[in-house]
Length: 104
Image 1 (tube, rainbow, N blue to C red):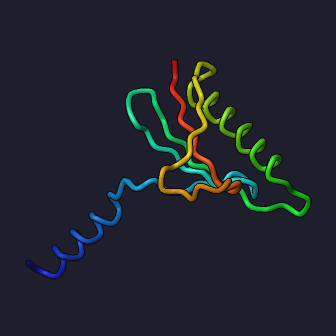
Image 2: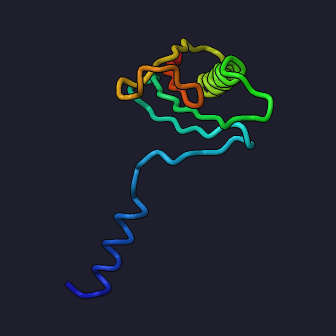
């Protein structure tokens, strides 16, 4: 195979990747979302520590963001569920959360 063909193949493989890339929403959140099935999505969300922050405030911010994201994605009609990844530690992990939502 010629060198040019190899370069084209490598560039095509790199640019056609469908891996979910993180998006940043201001300085408070990083998120990525994936379509699981028809009208069902997984939202992975993380947030940093703020100067005067508590676990409850972080979790509340993430729930509000997830509700707004689902509302925007589904145009107002959705079911939202908070879910924990099975491979995450059993202790309360307050900087990241997963939500599943289904558009109605």
